[in-house]
Length: 298
Length: 317
Image 1 (spheres, helix red, strand yellow):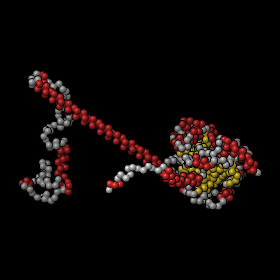
Image 2 (cartoon, chains in turn cyan, yellow):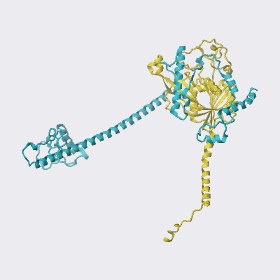
Image 3 (cartoon, rainbow over the protein chains, first blue to last red):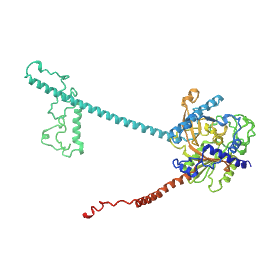
Image 4 (cartoon, each protein chain N blue to C red):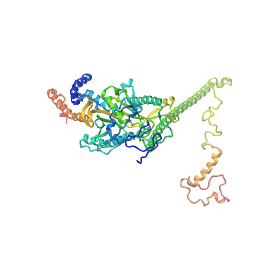
């Protein structure tokens, strides 16, 4: 019976709604409006929406718990929306931030209330009980997090290495340019000096002094001024230079072994004499020549 | 009653009593759960006598898809005062059968997950026996199994419920808030509940939808023992899940039916949305044909002038 009464009340309620929400378009238009936002919302509300406020209030009275019960039964906290009212639904980050702040503020308030009542709040460290996600699941979560972290770190490292390489390349090219320039300059200066001397007729005077900076006289050496200090290499020497003593020793050994075993090793005939070795008694290898009789396969 | 009671530090080891004739000691009794539902709805005489005897029945329809099934299982694990039941056939008049089922199990409310066309999930939240019922459309479902939701909490610990203030703006929101509190709030001395509060539910209304989030309250380890003022500042929330978004469709006066008390004016059913999309796509071909005929008409009505150079190369071969 009360429902019949409510039916009559409905029209008034609906009219109120219509005024409130200014629904004047037909439903076809409203459907076409929803083309843009083809998610779940009509642009204009339909006219036939039922809104039985009294009925709702009745039901609310029916089901709600008594007013004077302890807050600990309900554990509800209401959070003021405030400026959060303008949260855009489609902006995921802002929306989640809004939810997060709501929950955080709520927890703080609840915690204060609980503290007043002297009730335990958080789980102590030694309380072990069944959790809502299993341990294996948490392992998966952890491994995924670690994996992501590692990916990020690797990407960072790669980027840094790339940048460093670029930098190094730039620096190197700069240095090369500088050196070339210096060389050119010095050669130019020598030419100029020569010309000067020529012009002044090769006089023995001090006009022949080179006014230039030669450093310690090392700039004319090969390999830059005083860079490499390997002595005794003349320009025509093609021997490839001397190494240090130790590596020389190893080189000889290395060469001997290479000649014996490297690239498939030697063919037989290692125990047969050649012209040179016919007259060698008591073995041949005395640290002099490295396996000198047969150098077939190297 | 061989009951596995793990870690019942703060709960009595007393055997379960089926009736509530046992004298109550505040915060120390176990509750009986085999009682009839209507006790939950009578207003209790005085505050200390109030006992939350909420019991929720959770079921789903047949042919529910995996994601929604996992959501249902997540909710079952979140609410220790619920009872999961087997699937309900779709074609039977679900109002009557479900009502009977709820009565049979002696629950005071029900969460029924109905999956239609293997795509849309509708959630019925019903207070039994004569309570209001709400039908929601559920979207944006993320279950707890997603690896991005990294939090974890005690199974059965009572949550803190936070509601945004727009729940008080209108009557139907108030009703929904009350129903959510009763269904999602774990009764205080439920035998499967754990004593500490380490997670919080956040219900907010954005864009006329109710968004649900579940966060774990985490505090750095050394502070957990004594959460004083200092500890509060370092408190962070980690999301546990699940996540979903409810769009209220209708509120009925009875359980699973009854007179409609509220209808959401902005609701468009997903079927309508899909039909609309199809219609748009179907329109493309018709538009093309129309454009062709238009072009023909245009050409007929504006004939081109004869081209003087048209025959220029014809004689060249």
